[in-house]
Image (cartoon, one colour):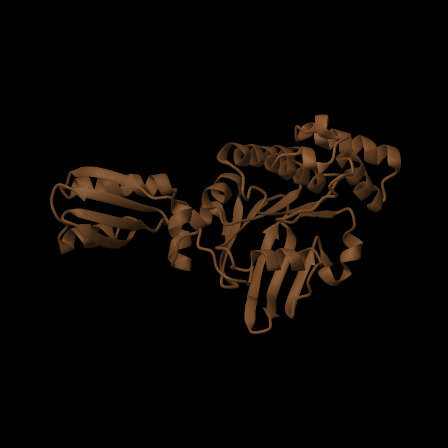
Length: 320
């Protein structure tokens, strides 16, 4: 699969603060790609460079095959929704969006039609002749999504599109992004520190921490590395039990208390996470050990914690 974004050895520094440190990864064309990391990991800096708002100090970034130094050549092919997108307060929203489309080269009639269709699709068409003062926070997010999907972009960058929303509105925004993605077949890159949101919505992900890339790849491949089981057993594991389990998809065994263990799974090539869990449970039963209780962890969250070493909602100082 060709790449919509190719990021190679990208570096950015703000005085003594390293925002991005030799970051390299690709964003596959047609994917919904999650850029994940704690606040201050470097996500917004990377977005700003990809949009042409900032210049990198080192490395290169190609968008849809074009070096970002020639960002003007991408007019109409890439759109971005900043985290704090600003609209004029008292100008009707239909006029504001139509003006943006005219800047992209659309004629007046086409711009008007596309804007009205977009506002209808995101559910705020009834407010088209009003200013943003008439919109709630959730409606403003919808307006930003409508703006980002206007026209026929090949790449859309969404920076924290559900930030500050209640769970119901956040889900509506995710459903809207998914619906628009499926109908347009564009590449959508979403910046977030919400692990559940990224795992639900995205098929590929990159994790940044302190400006460094920790991992990039498909969600399926990454979660294969983070699946774990917590189990209570009828008797303690002895060393021969542990050796046997390490032969059936168990990479580490952590003691949590009397007859309680955390098993980290390491799936072989072509093995699904479910198959690995079944294999481990069969191995435990073959040892004559009865599982008393078992829980499975959120694999993306487990992997995130393992590479960043802290909860995903930790707020840091810049870089962003």
